[in-house]
Length: 147
Image (cartoon, rainbow, N blue to C red; front, side):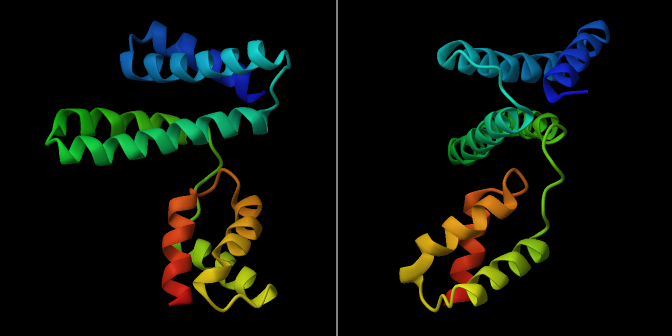
């Protein structure tokens, strides 16, 4: 079953069980997929859909930071719940230890010694972890390892 079919099946299930959160999140993802397909006049693959979901996940995580600054705990909780729904449609996320190991390997392979080469590091790490971790986590661990 493709990711698009799975989203549709889960949307139907959420509507039948009156799960508003799940329905809203899936509807948001499907709207983004449809928008991209219409704009580019293509049928999106599962990896394209994972990219869309990853982008929305990143937006949600940055929203949480803003909500925390504004003391909006209700919105923080709702956004965290939305993130949980989105994570179900992405590959299993890497742990910090797994991510640290991948970054160490790339540092060794490319003889990266300082923060000046962070661009090279990111360019080589990101394709290996596509959809399994976000760039902010990579950046944070890379800074730890290079300092």
